[in-house]
Image (cartoon, rainbow, N blue to C red; front, side):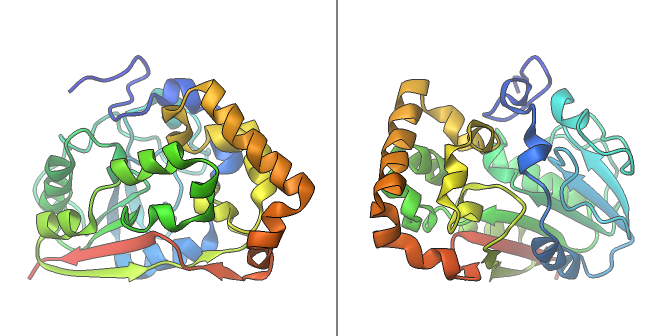
Length: 258
């Protein structure tokens, strides 16, 4: 496995795009509740691909795993330091934790099945994965403006069936509604706030934008800007500004041993 200069082990170099991540990717309490319910009051949890610590419960004893030094450095002071390791080789014993979790991470692993099996190995209870269903990614209105960005997203996210088949046991897949004022700035979080895509920092905090060059990005955002200024976006999608939730591609996978 090749790791980048700051330790990033997936297909994105967070040493390059990770600065300012926590300004835009703040955990949303409503999404956090879905995760907390799925963890079923586990007392010890390993958070794989933990990033800057989003969705880590302070009610549990959490061991965070994050290969990127730039992301580890952005963890807030109230959270414990993260272990420098990768999903595919977790430095823990079998059944060491009550549960394992990962959020917005599996699509960046170099060896998905190996990483999932490692999570299953170290957790004696539920394994919880917050991710996006690639079959639904292109249904988002942004595809009209930035097709190559969402093509990259759909290509990177693993099929939900691959996740459940690899984890085994009793699996449930629950759609997670995205609130209009979601504080976690992944692409669909801005479904009713399209002006957020005009902020370069917001784009940098969504890794899929790093898969298109600057000229393509500027062309996409330029068209969106023009449609916002002319009212064309609101004519086609303006009702979303009043929708309290979007039922998009976000899902929560939970697997427990049988």
